[in-house]
Amino acid sequence: MPGCTCSSASSRNWSRACCSSSSGGGSARRPLGRGALLGATVGAGFSAFESAGYAFNAAITTRGIDLSSLLQTEVARAVLSPVGHVLWTAILGAVLFGVAHGRPRFRWAWSVLVAYVVVSVLHGLWDSNSTISTLLAFVFTGTPFSAAQNGYVPSSLAGVVTTLYIAGLAVVSVIGVGVLVGVLLHYRRQARRLDARQHAELGAWAGSPPPHPLR
Image (tube, rainbow, N blue to C red; front, side, top):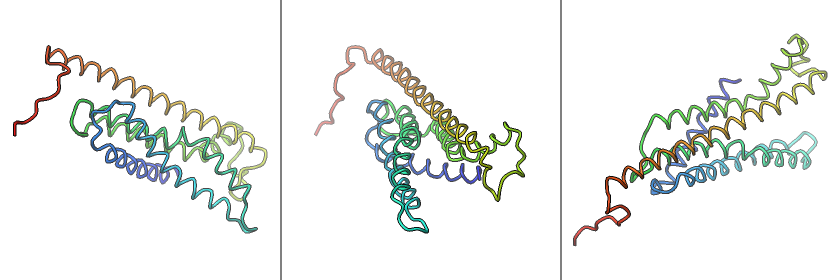
């Protein structure tokens, strides 16, 4: 169900956000790109564990071990992972580092919550894409829902469903990449303005190391 999917996606994204912030505990002053890289690394780790579960389910059949299904699942997951978990957590990591730029530690900001909601919605749309594409196939072709055979899509709609499914994944991926690029550009401009203001305030002392306490 879409509601359950969004709830599950939301909880998983929250876990990855916590991992990204805790993993970069002392990294708040590092470049923004490293936040995206750290987030992507965390997302890749989650994706690897999830892919292992999908591969296990695909391999175990009533006829025994199906190696062909296992390989197909792993290849598909490997292709889609960069525009899935990796991309979503990269967005969260970039926002976390962008908000913390110029500060000694991470801090709360509304933009973190907004990024979390956006990523959760993208994740939910990605996971619900199969259901959405099936419903759209019935609507676009004018096929009544009663034509579903014991809960299965009629063979005449299989091609339409597949096309809509691929198109849906592509749309979500493009939106995700656009969000990541927008986040990086926004916080880089913000970081340059902050650095320029600090440089103007410090004047001749700009770039000098901070004073050390006397012992």
